[in-house]
Image 1 (cartoon, one colour):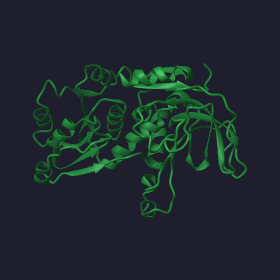
Image 2 (cartoon, one colour; image 1 turned 180 degrees about the vertical axis):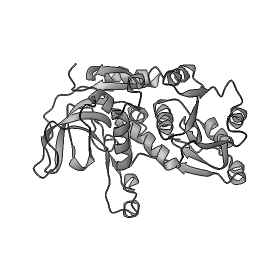
Image 3 (cartoon, helix red, strand yellow; image 1 turned 90 degrees about the horizontal axis):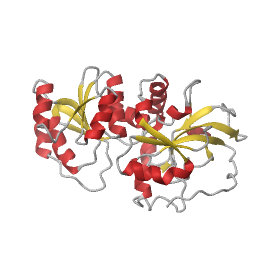
Length: 330
């Protein structure tokens, strides 16, 4: 259940800024929270939301380099800096990571206090509406960078949800030739309207199609974004010798995997989670440069009072990306 509550803004810490939130995007992770799948991490009642844009309303006394009125988004990761992952330079996947908006209060509120070091500056002229897409674009940038794909590579993305479409868009911007495999006709149509190539794995022999497309080699990189067990099992059949399979979707249960194919072709399987600062900065550039089809991705914008219906619509598959207008002028 969702409720709108009025309260005084939390006290501002010395190294924090207070953001006047403009827009918040709803994503699959938020749906997991909505269904109670993350109750071990979420303190009820919770304020969630981590895809956002806004402007700085107040700056703590020990914060330098930021001013009231600056347009910002947030990289919602706070790490401890002391665990083995952090000490090895992998702070973004800290073993005690605080994912802001899940493990601590998020952006679905008019004013949001955050540590100044999680701010990401938005360039002048970028609409705050489009800038709410920066966080999911950063996810896609991280996935693509982690894959190591190169200019001219042939890439298969399994799943045409928001992240799958963004991975395909970013991979194209990185010089790859991409096709999205998606069984849902509406999602295929949405991807095609954004200029992306698609195939229907329920209507064609997917492995034969990819082999023909790649001259019998197989794809250089395959991204598994669907979260479906059958997709994981079939994904290795699409990858070339010494190619790469990147697992992006969250799989709550163990999945069967074709280890013989993994062995036979010396495949590489990678996990890809969240993002690093470089991914966020590249995402800002892609959104600001118009390389992300924001108008096509944003299905609609709803007021904060309609947030529950927005969650229900997203879960039903009737939208690509829904934004909540928290504070931007209506």
